[in-house]
Amino acid sequence: MIKVNKAFILDIYKPIVNDTHKGIQGHALLIGGSYSKMGSVCLSSKAALKSGCGLVTAFVPKCGYEIVQIAFPEAMVLIDENEKVLSNIEYTIEPDAIGIGMGIGQDVITEKAFYNFLLQNKTNLVIDADGLNILSKNNNWLSLLPQKTIITPHKKELERLIGTWQSEEEKLEKVIQFSLDHDLVVVVKGAPTLVIYHSEIYQNTTGNQALATAGSGDVLSGIITSLLAQSYNPINAAILGVYLHGLTADIAAPEMSYQAFVASDIISYLGKVYLSLEN
Ligand SMILES: NC(=O)C1=CN([C@@H]2O[C@H](COP(=O)(O)OP(=O)(O)OC[C@H]3O[C@@H](n4cnc5c(N)ncnc54)[C@H](O)[C@@H]3O)[C@@H](O)[C@H]2O)[C@@H](O)CC1
Ligand SMILES: Nc1ncnc2c1ncn2[C@@H]1O[C@H](COP(=O)(O)OP(=O)(O)O)[C@@H](O)[C@H]1O
Ligand SMILES: [Mg+2]
Image (cartoon, rainbow, N blue to C red; front, top):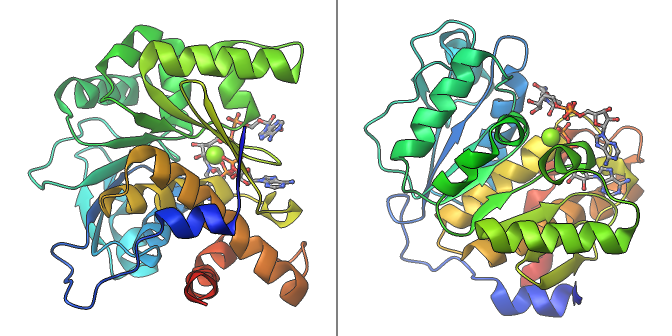
């Protein structure tokens, strides 16, 4: 088990070069949302852009068009033909990384759209939330995922994917086997969060109970998708993303309490977090 501390992070962290531009800084596509859960994809998309990629596109059901445009004008928006849920995930853009699953629900139309998306997709992928729940119900679709796809389950989602465990040791064994079987980078969210790739285990050292708040996982999947779009390899994108996400709460908690911290604050504190890496 490797502890991910600041020294480890500084080793993988890539400062932004001065002659970059938005066209080469990475384009993240976030595919998510459904009626009443459009906040999830707004949070992921905003977190992605605030983590340093150059462009962000959100792909949402039709009812999300104005919501995303107004909540987050920096994002470009593509819409599904269905009003309330994703039904046909088709686009002509060429993103560098895709995050999918936050807030999409598990409607049968959406399951089918997700399957068709997996059939044609070759881009590096982060799968979260209902994307994971749909995979749990259709585990033969795991073979369609690109190599080193990153999955970000919380405890319940992990149980749906790999079944229950009796001890921490058994949980780790099962996750390692799952990662080996499907060549996945597994972000085992919790306190602390682990990043597991095959038999490598990386234990994060940032974060606190302020993160126990709605949408904080949606923000994490946006951050990781952004880092992937910025050419971090999938293991480093997951490790760095989890570290930055946790550090926002460590810096914010003494300034604003555990209670008042909400998922949008993770996004607001990303600036201080990046500055702390530069000093
Ligand atoms: N503003 C929004 O639009 C939000 C949308 N969300 C979306 O809502 C959908 C449902 O997600 P949920 O995660 O709420 O539903 P789930 O049914 O997947 O998970 C909720 C259950 O898991 C348990 N759980 C979660 N984390 C746990 C942990 N660390 N240890 C033990 N138990 C744990 C909870 O107690 C609860 O019973 C997803 O699509 C998600 O993306 C949420 O992310 C919340 C915010
Ligand atoms: N007590 C805690 N200590 C540290 N991190 C936590 C704690 N509770 C939650 N988190 C983190 O917050 C995030 C919650 O993700 P998730 O449950 O998917 O939220 P949501 O689906 O509402 O966005 C994870 O990154 C998890 O590790
Ligand atoms: Mg979640």
